Each structure stands twice: as structure tokens, then as C-alpha cells.
Length: 122
Image (cartoon, rainbow, N blue to C red):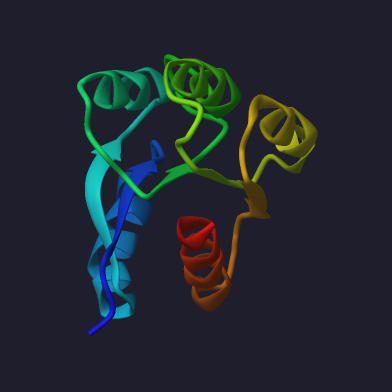
């Protein structure tokens, strides 16, 4: 049995969070943490939670994904962040902030799960 990849999923879309939380474990990906805005993601990481990959959206209330990525990586530069956003204009800023990869929503599930696995293994 493959080892589970532990994911913090950061997105303000509750329905999307619920879909991924239901589907991911089938593919050895376990969403062990959820945040609904960037500030919540930063707090989760500051509390010492350990994840293999953070999947980060860009457009969220309170704090956007690029800002959250910068703050998270300032505290721990080893954290792997995958950006998943409908805001293609934020690609360069996300990658410059330290995201390992950037995927555009909507994304095929197999592509997303493959990218999570690739980043977790890097």
C-alpha cells in the first residue's frame, strides 16, 4: 500500500474542499488540514502542523494565496506549495513567491493528483 501524502488544502470554496476531501484518499492523498483563507493557512502552519504539500488558491478573503505563500515560506522554506487557481494572472507572482508548481482551475483530477504526488516526492 502506498504511503499517504498529507495535504493542507487552502481554498475558500467549501464545496470544492468537500469534493477533494472525499476523492483524494482513493489516490493515497489525505487532506489532513483545511483552511478557507490565507491567514488561516499561515496560522495552521505556525501551529506546527506538518504536511507533505499545501494546495493553495489565490483569490480568498482575508489574505490571498501569494501573500500566504510568502509568509509560510518565510517561516519554513522547506514546505512544498502547489498553486491551484482560476487566476492565471497570478502564476508569475505565485512561482516567484516560492510555489513549486501552478495549475489552472478547473483542472482534471488525475492531473492535480499527479502533480501533488510529484511535488510530495521532490
